[in-house]
Every structure is written in C-alpha cells, then in structure tokens.
Image (cartoon, rainbow, N blue to C red; front, top):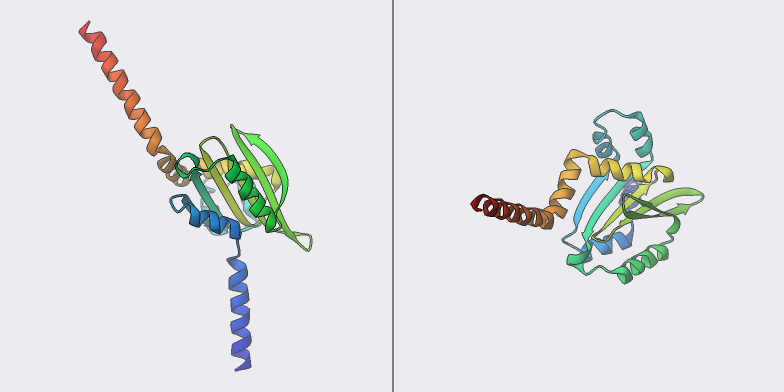
Length: 192
C-alpha cells in the first residue's frame, strides 16, 4: 500500500511539473478564447526541421514544451496598457526581463524564470501594431536565437498557414476588395 501511495505522489508531482507553464499565459488564453493556440513538444518541434538542420536541433534541445498564442489586438481591445499589465503579471511570477529587441518590425521582449541557477521557463512576447504573439516555453533556448525560432515557426508550411489563415481573414477581404477595384478600373478603361 505504501509503495502505491508513494508511486501516486511521484506521478502527480511529475505530472504537475510537466504541465506547469505560466499562470499568466493560461489566464491570457482564457480571456482571449478566440486566440490562435498551438502547443509544441520537443518531438513536434523536431518535425518542423524538414531540412534536418543540426542548428535547429541544437536550438530546441532544451525545450520541453511550448505554448504559442496569437492574439489579434484590434478585435480584442488589447492596448498598450493591457500589454504593460501583462508584463507586470509575468514579473509577479518571478519572470525577469532580460532582453528587448526589434526584428522585422516587431518588438521582442524576452523573460526568464530561473531556479537554483537553471532556466526553468522562458517567455518571448512578440508585439506589433496588429498582434501579440506569446511563446511560453518550459525549458529554454539560446537568447541570441529567439528570432531564429520565431522565423522557423512563421515559415513552417503548416504553422505558417494556420497563422496566415488566422490573421488573413481581414487581409483576404481587403485583397478581394482591391481585386474588385482593379477589375472595375480595367473595365472602365476598356469601355473608354
């Protein structure tokens, strides 16, 4: 009986640690239920490495699990004050801001959570005028390679399509309107 109880306690402890990602990210996900949500484990990330690039394998070697959220700011009334509150909530969970950078017109804010000198969690917030991307990582990646991971996710055919479909609802309507305007202008020229 004691062995079964000990096994149950160990199993519950391991299960809760394995699923422990940021409470702030979980709350953000619940608040923005229409956000695009993707979950990755290391074996899922390896499948993105279609070119068998050893640099990519090195990049993801310390990622146990990653949650990706994409929130359309305009549709969710997500403003700069909301972003500041989000950062504050992450800091309350002992995440430290370690780097801010800019890449392809997007702001990257990187946060680490350490325990006993070892990185346990990492957050990458990618912020632009239209969207907020959240990468909540259980584990870590080389800080200098964050934009490489973002680019790989963005350029992956399957993930890229999901992101484009999610973001493209408005873009597609705008493109269709532009095409209609061009067709009307062409017909007008032909009639003259």
